[in-house]
Length: 270
Image 1 (spheres, rainbow, N blue to C red):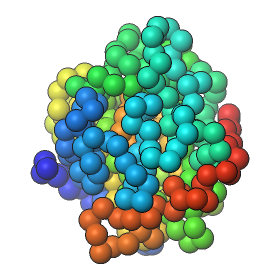
Image 2 (cartoon, rainbow, N blue to C red; image 1 turned 45 degrees about the vertical axis):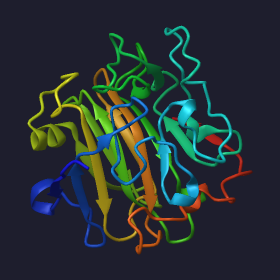
Image 3 (spheres, rainbow, N blue to C red; image 1 turned 180 degrees about the horizontal axis):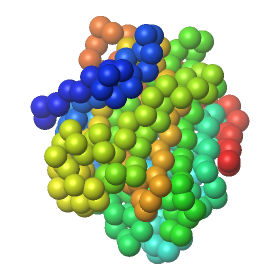
C-alpha cells in the first residue's frame, strides 16, 4: 500500500463544505493487477468486486463488471476506435437505477488507449472515461447520481478515482440529496498538492489516485467537468455513509443490493 498525502479542506484554505460535512483528500493508490494503472487501496487490486464487500467500482471495462450486474452499456464507446468490444459503462446495465446525466450528447466517451483528444491515465492499458468526446462542446460534464437508490438518510462518504493527465481546467463537484453544490475539488489543487504539471501524461504528480472522504452524511452525486480537452478518469470507487465501521472494507453497499436490480434505468441529458 502506498503512503497517503492528506489534505484537509477548510473554509480558509479551499472552502470546506459546511459545519455538517468536512472533506478530506488523500492521494495514493495501489497498482491494479488488471493493467489499469492505479486503483483504491480499499479494494482488491484485481478490481473484481462483489457488492457484498461494500464498495462499488466503475472501471469502464466489461471484464471487471461487478458480480451480479448484467452487461454494461456500450453506447458511449468511441466510434473512432475499432475493435473496442471490451469497453462499457458497467453502471448502466439493464435495470440499473444509477442516473447518469451529461452536458450534451457529445460530452462523454470511453476508449482504450490514447488519442489526440483523450490520453489514457499513466500505465492504464484498459478502457477509461473522458469528457468531452472528440469535438464535443465545452464546457463539458458528466454527473453520476446515486440518490434514488440510497437508503433514507444515507449518502456516499468515500470516492476514489484515478485521474489521468490532470489539467488546470478539470474539476470535481459534489452535490447533496437536494442537488445543492457541497464543494469543488479542482485540477490546480490536485496538481499543487502533488507537484504535478498540467496535462503531463506520464508523471506521477499529474496522474494521481485521488481519495475523497467525508464526515457526516456525505454526498449523493458527483460531476466531472472540463472546460478544455479533456478530463480522463478510471477506477471510480464509492462507499456509503451507513456502511459498517468495524471492518476496513465496509459491507452492504445498499445501492448494489437487491433493491438496485429491477429498478428502471434512467439517463438524463442536459
